[in-house]
Image (cartoon, rainbow, N blue to C red; front, side, top):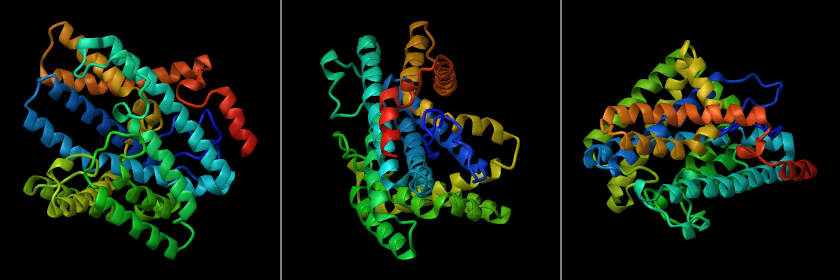
Length: 364
């Protein structure tokens, strides 16, 4: 990272510090794909809430995307945990993650809430000024930051990378929790997303080096990409499946089980396609987006919502225009903001402010 000499993860703001580890380009590509799909999902929800698209079509699209976007992000977030603990120690690594994600949650909750309150009735859901500091109810996508804080503590405690026994026991427990929490979407901080502990711990157990070995073979990558996509689409279109963090009102045993299978297949397919794209010229574009995934994750809803409002104010209500422009600006404007923040020395916008950076260094 640019703001901390810390190991990379799925939400990283810049290239990590040089190390003896060779960088796996497919991980950056997977980040790029995943964050773009996250932006697309939120743009689709926005145009649906604004009645620019058929509600059933929006539901179908978001269900398909939700089957793999956050599970892939969770898995990628776990890949570098073992390396981070080895480098900074358990205490240093946990402290860094808690400070970073805690600060970003506080800052961007205020930024996003303020933007929403200022927009008033122009937004799909109005926010009163008194709600801006209601931090115990995460705003939009920001619930993922306190979730990362929680699962980091769990991962460092159980160390699924340390042995096969630890991996089996921790993943088994995470699977039981996933099945219990699958599809549920509680509002309060730290309560949402527990179905994603399973892919996160899977990434921790796999580690970045293990992930690279899995997709080293071109035949394996193609096989997983095609088979995973076929299972994902077949289950999604043929049955009622429940994504891990959405659709809890339709929870049934069959829906949860099929949703779990579809999620695993879709996540594996996404990672395999990323491995294949990493072998092509497209890797440069996706990799560049992936290396700015943190900034995009934090700022894209403000940008995409502002884009939708601006287009509607000038009389543009064409669905395709809203989708294309919303996704494009939702990805590239945060990247531009990140570059500007770096040049201005405003690391605190997407990373830790100076006092918290010094606090982390003092304990690591």
